[in-house]
Length: 112
Image (spheres, rainbow, N blue to C red):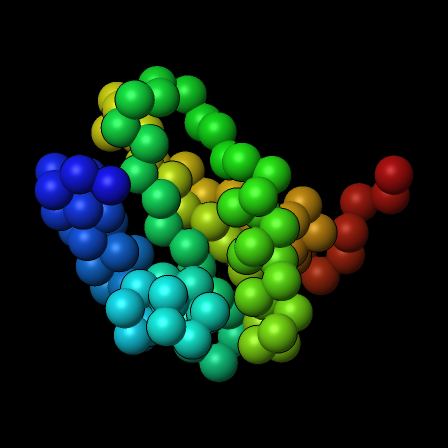
């Protein structure tokens, strides 16, 4: 990662840390294999894709984060910032459904 991407990545981590009220991990998770950010419920990996306009998450990144979540017994999310400056969050569909239903104030899931 070049210097500019590192600065953008650090800024993204700080933004997500602030928005989710999480703590950063030592050396952005590289030391203890625990993602960039975490709290008692979730780990979050932040990635900058400076040459990609869309949204792309490699299978290896996805597997790495899922293994970390299992190791730390937490839910997981990946926050990605692309070349256009758009920021996306990737979470498992069932988790997103729970967040959305909770946000709406509903208690019942719609039938399939």
